[in-house]
Each structure stands twice: as C-alpha cells, then as structure tokens.
Amino acid sequence: MTLHDPALAELRANVAQPFDRAQAMPKSVYTSASFAELEQQHIFGREWLCAGRAEALPDPGDYMTMEISGEPVIILRDRDGSLRGLSNVCRHRMSTLLEGRGNRRSIVCPYHAWTYNLDGSLRGAPAMARNETFCKEDVRLPSIRVEDWRGWIMVTLNPDAPPPSETLAGVDRLVGHLPMETYTEVFREEFEWATNWKVLAENFMESYHLPVCHAGTIGGASDLNKMECPEGEEAFNYHWIVKNDLVPLALAHPSNTALTGDDRRITWLLAIYPSLLITLTPGYFWYLSLTPKGPGKVQVLFGGGMSADWMADPQAAEHLKGVKALLDDVNVEDKGCVERVYRGLCAGLSAPGALSHLERPNYDFARWIASKIPEAQS
Image (tube, rainbow, N blue to C red; front, side, top):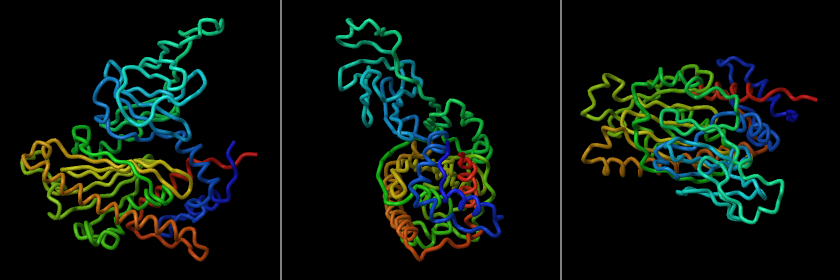
C-alpha cells in the first residue's frame, strides 16, 4: 500500500506544467521523511542501481557490499568469473555476513560460522546434526539480480525490471562512439554529504551553475551559449558541453583517429535514473552513485578513470594526478553548493523558482520521480 504524503500531490501539480512554465520541485519532496520512504519503496527498491565499475571485482572471490532500500547485499565475482548478487544475511539467525570489500574463498557467518559457497549454497553448519528439520541442501542465500552494463555493475531487487541493455539503449545511440566498457577505473571513494540525494542529482544534471559555483576550477572551460539540454529519454536524461583546451585529458588523445570534429572535445553528462551520474569525455570519466540516508543525507560513491589510449600514454600518471586534483576541488565546490541548497530548502521563507532552459534535465527528472510513485491507496 502506498503511504499518503502531501509532497506527492505537490510534485504531481508541479510536473503537470509544461516545460516553458516549469518551476523547481516543491520543498516538501526534499524534506519530507514520509516522501523519502516512498522513494525507498517505489524507486530504490524497484530500479537498477549502480554499485560501481565491473573492474573493481577482477578476480574470483572478490566482493563488495551495499544496502538497497534497507536490504543488505553482496556483489561478488563467482568462481566462473561471472558477477553474482546475494543476500548479505545468514539463513540461520540472520546476522549480516560481510562488510566493505575484499576477497573470500567462501562466505563465513561471523556469528555461528555457517559457511556458504560463492554461489550462495550452504557448505557447512556446525552442530546442526540433531535438528531433524535441518537439511543443508535446502539452504542457500537468496539471489539478487546483477548485470554488467557497459562496464557498470547494475543491481536491482526487482525480479521483473527490464534489463539495462533494453532501457538504456538510447545511451548507446548517443555515446556508443565512446566505449565506456574499455575505460579503466583508477580511483573509487565514498563519502557522505548533508543534503538530499535529489539536490545532488539535480546539481549534476545542469551545467547552468558551472560559471559561478565552479569559478575557481572548471567554470571557464565551457560556454553557456554552446550548451544543449534536449528532452531526456524514459530512463535517463543528458546534456553535453563542447570543451576548450583547458583540460587536455577531456579531449581525444592525439593518437585517436576514430573521433573527428566536435566528437573529439564533447563532454557528455548522463543521468541514469535514479542515481547513477556519469561524466564521459573522450579521455576520462568520473561518476557518482547516490544512496539516500534519509531526507538530509546522501552517501556518495565517487569514482573515475581514463580511456584506453590515455591509459597507454607515457604521461598517463601525470595527467591523471592533475585531473584527480581538479575533480577533488570541484567536489569541494559542489559540496558547498548542494549543502547550501538543502539548508535553504529547510528555511521557512524559501520557495522554488522558475527553471532556466538550461535546466531541462531537472524538469525531466521531476516528471520521472512523479511517474514512479503511485497514487495513495486506501
């Protein structure tokens, strides 16, 4: 049953307006605890989420953990080299099993040492021979859907969700000339910011803020007059920026003969709903994957890397060091911006304003959220 929340009615009224009359989303969709519960139930509990890059788990037994809508999850590389998702809860007394990242030949419960194979089957359970109802062969960790989509680990609790290859086919049409699956991740970090997850997602979706918020870093690398913000597709929105030469790594490598014209210098910003945000250039990529922690906090997975030709460059390490330092500075600026927005959202005298034509992705995002949460039922 869907909980009733006034924020949903406010959001539906907001997105009923055409884009040329669009306003920013109502404050309540960011600050309401009950609306955050609706998002967990109908969005994060149903959609494909990103756990990072597939190369983060290169070897059999490599694993990482995450939580999806309150459900502890293990993602691992099985013995046959395939990705697998499993419940991270023991089938005995329901202890969580693994934490963080690492490599295991088997999964051993830290409470009573029930031991599972990498496929989730139960290998052993000490001191269970006297229980006549216990059958080891009947016990296994529930499976969770995991797919490798163009080098990204995608996970969902929804057994009926269409595969990412189907819903994100439009991404291939747009940026298939930039083979994301061949890029190499070189850093992966996690941190928490004091803002609503949608504030951070919207900040990524629009480059209207670049000249001001990022005046000290990348604000001068693009021209607002050359930005395009078209209508998004059903499962994602996007825009692109034609970059100048300020950041060489953002351009195609000199040895790259496959890309021509503006394709050598266009930066793509892809917002994969609900919470995978990818900046993709001919030379490097960086991404954010967001996990809400209530209305006012968001856990951020931040990673990035380089294209194959830049990875092979003799000066790759130097270029990467410079770009990573730049991205760290950009994050400091973004953190300040999105945390100030959330403080403003919580103020009594604040109110949402009209959207610029450069904020079309934000409008599409609001409409997508409204479409995913059904009307309250009695």
